[in-house]
Length: 219
Image (tube, rainbow, N blue to C red; front, side, top):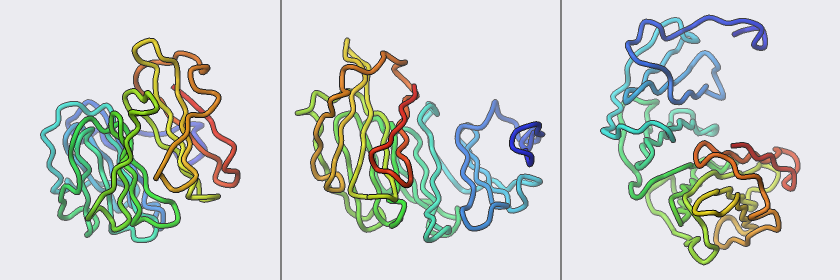
């Protein structure tokens, strides 16, 4: 759509697949779009008029938690999650390598002011890299009674503030944890176990880009 969603037209009907799992728009050049369709990734340099299949390979059949993120400081760096592994390209999607794999990955995020800092949320742990994914440090969340992921919220207003939103699961309602030291430690917030019982999947937390204390939950 080019009119704020009043109407629109399909762009990927020529690609044989059930639908798009993830979409990312280049923050510098909005005509450059990457889309994950099934287990394949495609890239357009003309706002979706034509598509080139990238050399992105994954064998993971579940595409529920797939996501594409483009480094806003270096748009040649593209990151993609297939739900278990985090893939990275340093050349705009021409070649890829896996920078981390492990248990179920529900979400990942880049520091909005420093794309070399990556956060990966797995079942009961948060993994952080400050060197673009070469090495990772791990913060365990098990002492919080954390369950199953699920979403990371980070804001340019203060990148030391990292919110995590999880649940429900095993009779636990939605849980919120906050780190004020860039992910080194977390404290459960008073809203934990008081949030409505949303679906076990597709929960999200968004933090205001201008107010680190203003957050929105959805699920």
